Length: 241
Image 1 (cartoon, rainbow, N blue to C red):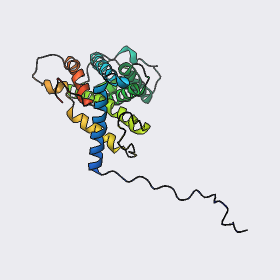
Image 2 (image 1 turned 135 degrees about the horizontal axis):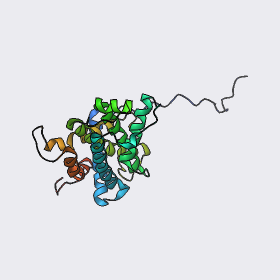
Image 3 (image 1 turned 90 degrees about the vertical axis):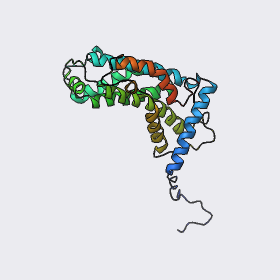
Image 4 (image 1 turned 180 degrees about the horizontal axis):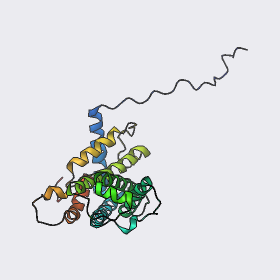
């Protein structure tokens, strides 16, 4: 029987159109806006979110972890003899992340742990000697070049801040940026933020060279951790913006 016009339709109607793509100018404007809003929040309250301390402490643990791995395959990596190559690599990434990230609690800790995972993958991909040691369970000394060390350094600090801001965007947290749009389905804003931070954070390689007889690369890295965190967060460094 034909349906009466007064009867409600069971159809949900056509699906909603996806939000329009952001232009490059909009991505840059919003990326700068989120980072500036986070910096303003942290200037008002340096302890807000626990982010600053979480990234700094994990950054120092990253220096220790990379240095220890470069000296010798660490005892914490020991796995079952019958483990497959994929299992050994997964275990390396998981344990590396545990060493760097520490405890997991709020959004800041989760952002740091994701960054530590990215750093673990980068160091494993970038060092054939380390990868062979992990795959075979054979102790190995060295394998982390200064260039790889500094690449991992940049990745960790950029991703820690970017991951936190991605959480802000996803969770639609208006505490940081109440007037900014929080829709970024393609992740373009987060990608822009990560690339921008990667381009500005200092690394120990900036203060070292192949002919430099100064401090080891890990020691230089430790000396830069606080400045790196502040630059990554968009905070003033030594009174400068």
